[in-house]
Length: 297
Image (cartoon, rainbow, N blue to C red):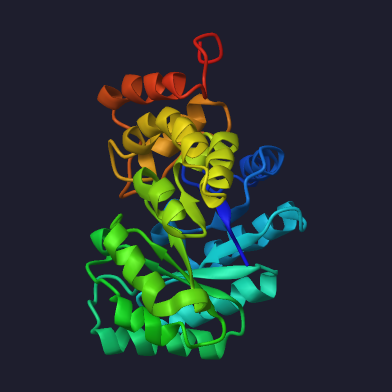
């Protein structure tokens, strides 16, 4: 249903932390023009952890309205409360989102049975296509392939964003689930290899700043054209690493600010990119061809 370069979209904010709808419109138009394949609204990169439920629904609704059917919208609706996840997922469906992305419940460290029952409850409560999201480095819980395979039997659980970066893990999920579940990368550094292995796309931080290149890389990788995909990815590698010099989305929001796309706002407990990293991010944008020296002066 979804494939290619899916942008883990930032939520633009003013310096006081207020959501900036005008900049959100600018970002949506940018990604439509640059041929991104989908937008993921209010995921990790969209600062879902610091938006309240009303704001969360507002950003999803406005993104859907701004996209106006020109690009699919996947709404981040995961929570560590099953009831909250159901409420957010229902809100996204009513707003017109094409699918939802649900992170494994973080902090409270459920068992594998708890993870299964959580996602099953959301899937049965809200009939919208749903993508699981496994990122144990942030959540402190790892949804195992056997649990993923159980969930893949539910009709509206259609994919998983696998952010461990492990090709072995991705292959095991694909072996267990076959065509019943699409596997997407949640790790820019290994996304090309996952797609060449049979993954269906990349939910990408890098695509925020280099959408056309990321789209082209994904097209090549999905076609099995390693040479072309590698050539493009080699240019993007500097961004795959540099955009994580501090916790995501700190560097990518600063990069987009440098590009004139958004104000510098970010919400506590996250902070604006430290001064010592700003030149590093600037040079990475130049090296990847995102900015020229003239553009960033």
